[in-house]
Image (cartoon, rainbow, N blue to C red; front, side):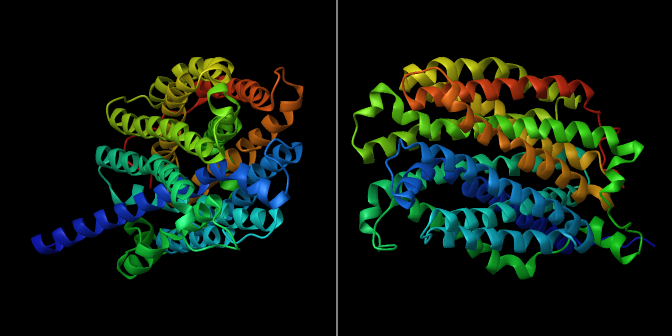
Length: 447
């Protein structure tokens, strides 16, 4: 006998579902908020903590460390988090991961050395990496209707770019009005206030957490004893091997384009002729303004992908819609706009952000459709954390190490050329790998 919920009960379930979607959207927004504050604050933070001028070679070296080491830590623990998501449930892991990155970001604002800053950034990255996998699995299983699921997952992920805009605005406010705020470690440094603002997502979560249900698909299988134990070895069985390998490579390329090129822009901007002669506060405001163009572009890209995801059946064609223009735009922007014109760089990095950041939303829509319930969190985690965080983010280290070998009269120009080289190479690799990307067998999530 099938029990049909009353109209009132159905309405409550619908409201609760949207509350969960809202929490996931907040999580996605602050994922980006936490990660994208580093390109903005890394130069002034390192200059203060190392006690050297912004152009000192040790700054460039530590930038590479701060981009890559936390990403590796996040990848390792994020991989474990994906396994725990399948083992203990989506809700519990998601909530604790958000609390971890929120409070570690706040603690980073009190860092007394570059080593402590690195430690707290590692903790933040761990929370972000785990949260993404848990949220995508949770959301995907809440919406059985394929078109609704594609739209919800796509549009909630668009909040990731909203988080980038939020941190850009937050940094601008900290630079402009930080002198009016209470002192932190004896000063009013904008980078410290920006880091501490990462505690914000913990506030609504603490209030709403008691009312959040578990994923019904996961819970039903768990209660029925039909939930197989997740295994990383399962990912490399014949039916999943190609999917695992190709998605890992392609997510590595997407993250490499972001970390090896796009996130280097805040350190390139002060080298432009229009910016070099400005006072420090005006320089930082200009950095924030340029970053906002990239974030608006990324937000638009995510929204457009969410719209196209329910209209373009072929996942490969959907991805190529963004890959091909990005492959042309990225080298042009970093080789020419980033070395000659502030205005051209603003619009150019907005276009590159549109094409590149949209691809992050693509994986949130694609991966739940190619793994069954018991393996969904583990499969998503492997691609995102091994491919994206542990391999892809190493591009930041590659870019910073290439700077010394690049042509150009000034470090920012050398950095732009290095970013152009790394970004173009990974775009080419990702495009080639896409021809082996398996198409999902059906619109419904596999059981």
